[in-house]
Each structure stands twice: as structure tokens, then as C-alpha cells.
Length: 105
Image 1 (cartoon, one colour):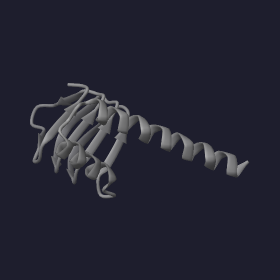
Image 2 (tube, helix red, strand yellow):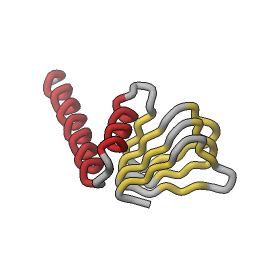
Image 3 (cartoon, rainbow, N blue to C red):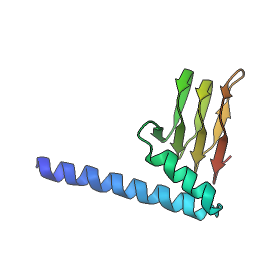
Image 4 (spheres, rainbow, N blue to C red):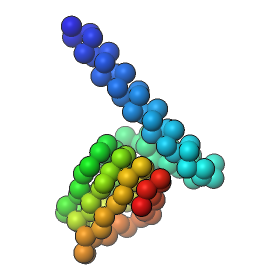
């Protein structure tokens, strides 16, 4: 039973990763931009968020959000990428790096 649960978890991770890959490929980005996004996603230091979320306070590092909405009520010291979702900035929030929405707003 434990092996079945592990296999299902692995399959769901692969399926989610495949969906994310398709979302980025579907955006029709220049090759260099697409490569940079894949590098961000593959970087173990990048915080990956799937689904609705928010960040309050200060987060040091890059953030990639899939299928938001995402609300920032603080500061990100790095880049923010939102794929297939929307991003909402609360008053006083900030991102020190680039903000890239793909297939969203």
C-alpha cells in the first residue's frame, strides 16, 4: 500500500510538472526567456507555490506561482513569476526583481 501511495504522489508531481511545462511553452515566449523561467523553476532555492497563496512580510529569494490567485502583502527580494493565475499587490508591497505574469494578469 505504501508503494502505491508513493507511486501516486510521484505521478501527480509529474503530471503537475507537465502541465506547468505546457503553460510556459504555450505562452510563446522567446527562447531565452523560456530558458530563464525553466532555470528559475529548476532552482532548488526558488519557492514554488501551486494554487491560491499569499506572502506577508519579507521573502528572500525568487517565487514562482502556478494557478493563483496570488496576493503579495509584503516584499519579495527576488523575482516573481505567476503562471496561469493573477497577482494582487496590496498597498506597500514590492518586488525587487522582475514580475512576470504568464497566461494571467
